[in-house]
Image (cartoon, rainbow, N blue to C red):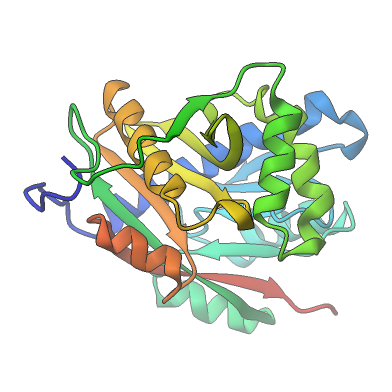
Length: 279
Protein backbone atom coordinates (compact mmCIF):
# COMPACT_ATOMS: atom_id res chain seq x y z
CA UNK A 1 0.00 0.00 0.00
CA UNK A 2 1.22 3.51 -0.75
CA UNK A 3 2.11 5.27 2.47
CA UNK A 4 3.04 2.19 4.55
CA UNK A 5 6.79 2.56 3.86
CA UNK A 6 7.13 -1.19 3.36
CA UNK A 7 7.64 -1.06 -0.40
CA UNK A 8 10.84 -2.14 -2.11
CA UNK A 9 12.37 0.75 -4.04
CA UNK A 10 14.59 0.16 -7.05
CA UNK A 11 17.82 2.12 -7.26
CA UNK A 12 17.78 5.52 -8.97
CA UNK A 13 20.18 4.47 -11.72
CA UNK A 14 20.38 4.53 -15.51
CA UNK A 15 17.97 1.62 -15.82
CA UNK A 16 15.32 3.48 -13.82
CA UNK A 17 15.91 6.70 -15.76
CA UNK A 18 15.36 4.86 -19.04
CA UNK A 19 12.03 3.48 -17.81
CA UNK A 20 10.82 6.84 -16.50
CA UNK A 21 11.94 8.95 -19.47
CA UNK A 22 10.78 6.29 -21.92
CA UNK A 23 7.31 6.41 -20.37
CA UNK A 24 7.09 10.18 -20.58
CA UNK A 25 8.34 10.09 -24.17
CA UNK A 26 5.72 7.47 -25.06
CA UNK A 27 2.98 9.53 -23.41
CA UNK A 28 3.91 12.70 -25.26
CA UNK A 29 4.22 10.88 -28.58
CA UNK A 30 0.68 9.53 -28.18
CA UNK A 31 -0.50 13.05 -27.34
CA UNK A 32 1.08 14.43 -30.51
CA UNK A 33 -0.56 11.68 -32.56
CA UNK A 34 -3.93 12.55 -31.05
CA UNK A 35 -3.35 16.23 -31.84
CA UNK A 36 -2.59 15.31 -35.45
CA UNK A 37 -5.90 13.43 -35.73
CA UNK A 38 -8.04 16.10 -34.08
CA UNK A 39 -6.29 19.27 -35.29
CA UNK A 40 -4.52 18.31 -38.55
CA UNK A 41 -3.70 21.95 -39.36
CA UNK A 42 -1.09 21.90 -36.56
CA UNK A 43 1.01 19.41 -38.57
CA UNK A 44 1.85 17.76 -35.26
CA UNK A 45 4.37 14.92 -35.57
CA UNK A 46 7.29 13.25 -33.86
CA UNK A 47 10.52 11.52 -34.80
CA UNK A 48 13.02 9.30 -33.03
CA UNK A 49 16.71 10.04 -33.42
CA UNK A 50 19.39 8.01 -31.60
CA UNK A 51 16.83 6.85 -29.05
CA UNK A 52 15.58 10.40 -28.47
CA UNK A 53 11.93 11.33 -29.03
CA UNK A 54 11.47 14.75 -30.63
CA UNK A 55 7.89 16.03 -30.53
CA UNK A 56 6.35 18.90 -32.50
CA UNK A 57 2.91 19.99 -31.25
CA UNK A 58 2.90 23.57 -32.49
CA UNK A 59 5.54 26.22 -31.93
CA UNK A 60 4.09 27.45 -28.63
CA UNK A 61 3.07 24.10 -27.14
CA UNK A 62 4.81 22.89 -23.95
CA UNK A 63 4.81 19.43 -25.54
CA UNK A 64 7.16 20.59 -28.29
CA UNK A 65 10.52 19.29 -27.06
CA UNK A 66 12.55 16.10 -26.68
CA UNK A 67 12.70 13.34 -24.09
CA UNK A 68 15.37 10.72 -23.48
CA UNK A 69 18.28 12.65 -24.99
CA UNK A 70 21.50 10.75 -24.27
CA UNK A 71 19.89 7.96 -22.24
CA UNK A 72 19.55 5.30 -24.91
CA UNK A 73 22.27 6.11 -27.45
CA UNK A 74 25.27 8.47 -27.55
CA UNK A 75 24.60 12.04 -28.67
CA UNK A 76 26.85 13.58 -31.31
CA UNK A 77 26.88 16.86 -33.19
CA UNK A 78 25.21 15.04 -36.10
CA UNK A 79 22.40 13.82 -33.83
CA UNK A 80 21.77 17.32 -32.51
CA UNK A 81 21.94 18.75 -36.04
CA UNK A 82 19.11 16.44 -37.12
CA UNK A 83 16.97 17.16 -34.06
CA UNK A 84 17.48 20.91 -34.30
CA UNK A 85 16.50 20.91 -37.97
CA UNK A 86 13.30 19.06 -37.08
CA UNK A 87 12.22 21.94 -34.82
CA UNK A 88 13.70 24.85 -36.75
CA UNK A 89 12.15 23.75 -40.06
CA UNK A 90 8.79 24.10 -38.28
CA UNK A 91 9.55 27.48 -36.75
CA UNK A 92 9.70 26.06 -33.23
CA UNK A 93 12.22 26.66 -30.43
CA UNK A 94 14.52 23.77 -29.49
CA UNK A 95 14.06 22.30 -26.01
CA UNK A 96 15.48 19.15 -24.45
CA UNK A 97 14.42 17.60 -21.13
CA UNK A 98 17.62 15.92 -19.93
CA UNK A 99 18.16 13.49 -17.08
CA UNK A 100 21.50 13.80 -15.23
CA UNK A 101 21.92 10.06 -15.86
CA UNK A 102 22.74 11.02 -19.46
CA UNK A 103 26.14 12.16 -18.19
CA UNK A 104 28.35 15.23 -18.06
CA UNK A 105 29.61 14.76 -21.61
CA UNK A 106 26.13 15.65 -22.88
CA UNK A 107 26.03 18.76 -20.68
CA UNK A 108 29.37 19.84 -22.14
CA UNK A 109 28.08 19.27 -25.68
CA UNK A 110 24.93 21.30 -25.04
CA UNK A 111 26.99 24.15 -23.57
CA UNK A 112 29.28 24.05 -26.58
CA UNK A 113 26.31 24.43 -28.92
CA UNK A 114 24.85 27.41 -27.07
CA UNK A 115 22.15 25.78 -24.95
CA UNK A 116 21.08 27.30 -21.65
CA UNK A 117 19.17 25.71 -18.74
CA UNK A 118 15.68 27.17 -18.36
CA UNK A 119 13.74 24.82 -16.09
CA UNK A 120 14.20 22.18 -13.38
CA UNK A 121 11.90 19.24 -12.62
CA UNK A 122 12.01 16.76 -9.75
CA UNK A 123 11.27 13.36 -11.29
CA UNK A 124 9.78 11.14 -8.57
CA UNK A 125 8.89 7.48 -8.39
CA UNK A 126 7.18 4.94 -6.16
CA UNK A 127 6.81 1.16 -6.39
CA UNK A 128 3.30 -0.10 -7.06
CA UNK A 129 1.83 -3.42 -6.03
CA UNK A 130 -1.51 -5.16 -6.35
CA UNK A 131 -4.16 -3.40 -4.29
CA UNK A 132 -2.01 -0.26 -4.08
CA UNK A 133 -3.63 2.88 -2.80
CA UNK A 134 -3.24 5.42 -0.03
CA UNK A 135 -3.40 4.21 3.56
CA UNK A 136 -4.99 7.54 4.48
CA UNK A 137 -8.56 8.67 5.09
CA UNK A 138 -10.23 10.15 2.02
CA UNK A 139 -13.03 12.67 1.74
CA UNK A 140 -16.05 10.46 1.15
CA UNK A 141 -17.87 13.34 -0.57
CA UNK A 142 -15.33 13.35 -3.41
CA UNK A 143 -15.86 10.87 -6.23
CA UNK A 144 -13.34 10.08 -8.96
CA UNK A 145 -14.05 8.52 -12.34
CA UNK A 146 -12.73 8.41 -15.87
CA UNK A 147 -14.45 10.66 -18.37
CA UNK A 148 -16.51 9.38 -21.29
CA UNK A 149 -16.29 10.49 -24.91
CA UNK A 150 -18.86 13.26 -24.40
CA UNK A 151 -17.09 14.83 -21.39
CA UNK A 152 -13.91 16.05 -23.02
CA UNK A 153 -15.05 19.66 -23.03
CA UNK A 154 -16.14 19.50 -19.37
CA UNK A 155 -12.76 18.01 -18.42
CA UNK A 156 -10.87 20.67 -20.41
CA UNK A 157 -12.85 23.53 -18.87
CA UNK A 158 -12.17 22.18 -15.37
CA UNK A 159 -8.48 21.78 -16.17
CA UNK A 160 -8.25 25.33 -17.51
CA UNK A 161 -9.86 26.66 -14.32
CA UNK A 162 -7.39 24.62 -12.29
CA UNK A 163 -4.47 26.29 -14.05
CA UNK A 164 -6.07 29.74 -14.23
CA UNK A 165 -3.00 31.35 -12.65
CA UNK A 166 -1.20 30.58 -15.95
CA UNK A 167 -3.32 32.46 -18.52
CA UNK A 168 -0.69 31.87 -21.22
CA UNK A 169 -1.70 28.17 -21.19
CA UNK A 170 -5.43 28.84 -21.56
CA UNK A 171 -5.77 28.07 -25.29
CA UNK A 172 -3.60 24.95 -25.00
CA UNK A 173 -5.62 23.65 -22.05
CA UNK A 174 -9.01 24.28 -23.63
CA UNK A 175 -7.99 22.25 -26.67
CA UNK A 176 -7.16 19.29 -24.44
CA UNK A 177 -10.82 18.33 -24.24
CA UNK A 178 -11.01 17.09 -27.81
CA UNK A 179 -7.63 15.37 -27.51
CA UNK A 180 -8.02 13.76 -24.09
CA UNK A 181 -10.52 11.09 -25.14
CA UNK A 182 -8.61 10.24 -28.34
CA UNK A 183 -5.17 9.69 -26.85
CA UNK A 184 -3.97 6.09 -26.82
CA UNK A 185 -2.48 4.70 -23.62
CA UNK A 186 -3.94 7.41 -21.40
CA UNK A 187 -7.01 8.00 -19.26
CA UNK A 188 -8.44 11.33 -18.10
CA UNK A 189 -9.95 11.43 -14.61
CA UNK A 190 -12.47 13.83 -13.09
CA UNK A 191 -13.03 14.42 -9.37
CA UNK A 192 -16.41 15.77 -8.26
CA UNK A 193 -17.71 17.20 -5.00
CA UNK A 194 -21.49 17.21 -4.60
CA UNK A 195 -21.68 16.27 -8.28
CA UNK A 196 -19.70 19.38 -9.29
CA UNK A 197 -16.35 18.88 -11.09
CA UNK A 198 -13.48 20.34 -9.07
CA UNK A 199 -10.29 18.55 -10.16
CA UNK A 200 -8.70 16.60 -12.99
CA UNK A 201 -5.80 14.24 -13.54
CA UNK A 202 -4.26 12.04 -16.23
CA UNK A 203 -2.84 8.53 -16.09
CA UNK A 204 -0.55 7.19 -18.83
CA UNK A 205 0.60 3.56 -18.80
CA UNK A 206 3.64 2.16 -20.58
CA UNK A 207 5.97 -0.72 -19.90
CA UNK A 208 4.72 -1.27 -16.39
CA UNK A 209 5.14 2.40 -15.47
CA UNK A 210 2.21 4.65 -14.53
CA UNK A 211 2.78 8.33 -15.30
CA UNK A 212 0.63 10.55 -13.08
CA UNK A 213 0.21 13.91 -14.79
CA UNK A 214 -2.09 16.86 -15.38
CA UNK A 215 -3.27 17.12 -11.77
CA UNK A 216 -5.04 20.37 -10.89
CA UNK A 217 -7.94 21.63 -8.77
CA UNK A 218 -10.12 24.67 -9.37
CA UNK A 219 -9.39 27.46 -6.83
CA UNK A 220 -12.68 27.13 -4.93
CA UNK A 221 -12.27 23.36 -4.66
CA UNK A 222 -8.83 23.25 -3.11
CA UNK A 223 -7.88 21.88 0.33
CA UNK A 224 -10.75 19.41 0.36
CA UNK A 225 -8.85 16.28 -0.63
CA UNK A 226 -9.52 16.16 -4.37
CA UNK A 227 -5.91 15.53 -5.35
CA UNK A 228 -5.56 12.89 -2.66
CA UNK A 229 -8.59 11.10 -4.07
CA UNK A 230 -7.26 11.38 -7.63
CA UNK A 231 -3.88 10.01 -6.57
CA UNK A 232 -5.45 7.06 -4.76
CA UNK A 233 -7.79 6.23 -7.63
CA UNK A 234 -5.07 6.39 -10.28
CA UNK A 235 -2.63 4.28 -8.24
CA UNK A 236 -5.23 1.60 -7.73
CA UNK A 237 -6.05 1.59 -11.45
CA UNK A 238 -2.33 1.34 -12.32
CA UNK A 239 -1.91 -1.60 -9.95
CA UNK A 240 -4.92 -3.36 -11.46
CA UNK A 241 -3.30 -2.94 -14.90
CA UNK A 242 -0.13 -4.67 -13.70
CA UNK A 243 2.13 -1.64 -13.27
CA UNK A 244 5.02 -2.02 -10.82
CA UNK A 245 6.12 1.62 -10.79
CA UNK A 246 4.48 5.05 -10.59
CA UNK A 247 6.10 8.35 -11.53
CA UNK A 248 5.34 12.05 -11.50
CA UNK A 249 7.16 15.35 -11.97
CA UNK A 250 7.07 18.57 -9.96
CA UNK A 251 8.95 21.80 -9.52
CA UNK A 252 11.74 21.33 -6.95
CA UNK A 253 10.61 22.34 -3.47
CA UNK A 254 7.02 22.96 -4.59
CA UNK A 255 3.88 21.98 -2.67
CA UNK A 256 3.33 19.28 -5.30
CA UNK A 257 6.71 17.75 -4.53
CA UNK A 258 6.13 17.89 -0.78
CA UNK A 259 2.72 16.25 -1.15
CA UNK A 260 4.20 13.48 -3.29
CA UNK A 261 6.96 12.86 -0.75
CA UNK A 262 4.40 12.71 2.06
CA UNK A 263 2.79 9.81 0.22
CA UNK A 264 6.01 7.89 -0.24
CA UNK A 265 7.35 9.15 -3.57
CA UNK A 266 11.12 9.53 -3.80
CA UNK A 267 13.13 11.85 -6.01
CA UNK A 268 14.92 9.83 -8.68
CA UNK A 269 16.77 12.85 -10.08
CA UNK A 270 16.38 16.50 -11.00
CA UNK A 271 15.88 16.94 -14.73
CA UNK A 272 17.08 20.03 -16.58
CA UNK A 273 15.27 21.60 -19.51
CA UNK A 274 17.73 23.11 -22.00
CA UNK A 275 16.91 25.79 -24.57
CA UNK A 276 18.93 26.52 -27.69
CA UNK A 277 19.75 30.21 -27.82
CA UNK A 278 18.62 31.97 -30.98
CA UNK A 279 21.42 32.49 -33.47
